[in-house]
Length: 188
Image (cartoon, rainbow, N blue to C red):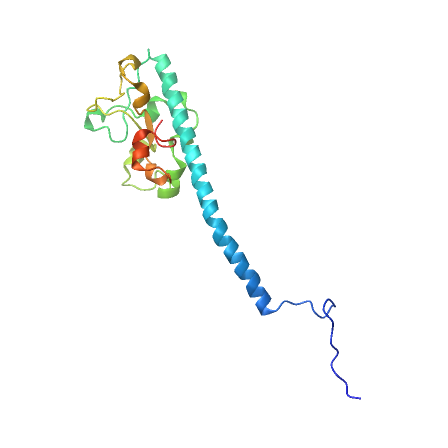
């Protein structure tokens, strides 16, 4: 009698390995799932940055209100990053509000850090000397400037921006029109 090699039935110990086709199918399924999940995770991270930025702007706004309570309802005498040469010797908003804001991370938008790296890294960054990514409505030439004005002199305070994030372009989903209108995450 001729001897034939012993055949194993499916499910026995001899059939433990995977074929190349099975491995490729599993890898392609994993690849498809990853291509679906990664954009969702990126959007979730952007929304988290936006939420943190909105919280930072709110905390700065509260610090301004606390300052105003101590200084007879006058807005801070502080400059912003591009207030101009007329305010070159005036301290920054961060310096003025230092007693009211304990956490230095409030002054740096996470979207800015994600887009541009650390705030202090680029030597040519205009935000380096200001040490904050949030601007303040301190433009002496503007009619709606808040620089050193009493609160009672502001005609429509809800329509005048106080603090805004310089990383507006980094916040996904905020268009220029929404930025000007004070969209959540853009202007406080």
